[in-house]
Image (cartoon, rainbow, N blue to C red; front, side, top):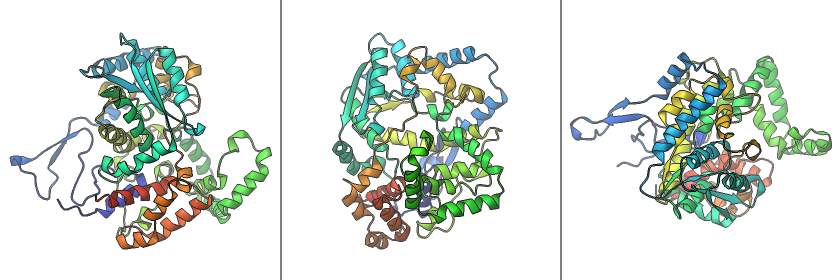
Amino acid sequence: FDNGIERRALALYMRHNYVPAPWSIYENVWKLPPGCYVQFAGGDLPTGGRGDITAYWSLREAAQRGLADPFTGSEAEATNELERLLRQSLAGQMIADVPLGAFLSGGVDSSTVVALMQAQSPRPVKTFTIGFHEGDYDEAQHAKAVARHLGTDHTEWYVTPQDALDVIPKLPALYDEPFADSSQIPTHLVCMLAKRHVTVSLSGDAGDELFGGYNRYFWAMRLWRRLSSVPLPLRRLAAAGVRAVPPGAWNRVFAALHPLLPGRLRFRLPGDKLHKAAGLFAARRPEEIYLRLVSHWEYPTEVVLGVETEPPTPLTDPGQWLDCPDFERRMMYLDAITYLPDDILVKVDRAAMGVSLETRVPLLDHRVVEFAWRLPLSMKIRDGQSKWVLRQVLYQYVPRELIERPKMGFGVPLDQWLRGPLREWAEDLLSEERLKHEGFLNPAPVQQMWAEHLSGRRNWAYSLWDVLMWEAWLESGR
């Protein structure tokens, strides 16, 4: 086929770190959206058309039905019904004629899946986790505690930076098109570990989108309420004031005030975070805050050459938003139709199939999803705690003290690696001469980001990873 690059899809990739369906990175090549099938008349593939696409299940319709028919039972009844549906899902997904296990991070979602698997299994469930020696990224100790309590047959692998770095050259071939969620690295590693012991592994993916797990569900609306009480011109003035002071200067101010600051204001690179927060001040509606929070490159048309206007997606097209009074649930819906299928599920599927491991996602049983959308928001987010009703199921099997801790992402110390062991590799892929010769990306903003990142003034790891994975994919021969 003609493998010409679709530059509009490249712009979408730079915003999201993935190419959202139905787009693909190639011109005139389209992805089939989730929950759909395609029919071609006469058995021949059309040369220019996309076929007759039909949805056999729609999250939008499921969400609308749930909102129209809300669950009215007690909290105990909601907990019992959710547990019943999860057990039902797992009973089907644990059927296998090959060895089966589960990923276990020690968080709410994977711990719930493993707890209910173990409750229905006559023998110890095989569970797998990887750990990092860098403490900020290590969940292995939490997973081990949960595994010990449940009595699973647990295997862990503490990977070295070199183990992780060795995965990077494989990534372009694994994903077939540019894909830049850096947790693809530990995901592939845990799949490698699991494949040594099993052929099928269950995961806890989708708990965040269904039951309100992401931090943005808590503070995006809170931030909007505060911002919207201040006139827009004043907010723009405040943003200009923050940006007028370089991030490095803000870092020095915070360092000087460090002994006087409360714990919640003591974090790395405060100047970097202040500059990012300033970008939210000019929001005119809460959806703009959400879009900025989930965007890697806020203005991708400034870096992708030959694209004047970014194509509409569910994130930018109000016609595709869910009609729901709760901004939190509108965010969950958008995450569930974009980030979940195009990032999370793609990441896990490709990382697993790269080692011939099958993965299954019991939380995405349609009955679980449909019930989740009937639940009131108060059973998902309560008193600053996420996934309230899912936790009630889990706490029947695992003590709270083994679970309750700040949410951790499944990540790697990418910012440090780009300044250290990955620097030479990145320098080559980000070179001005290379970018000019290829003609896809504007070298100026890329070079500026790279310089700021290397100096330590800013943390541009995720935005730079988008460029690096694009360049690595391009170099691999696409």
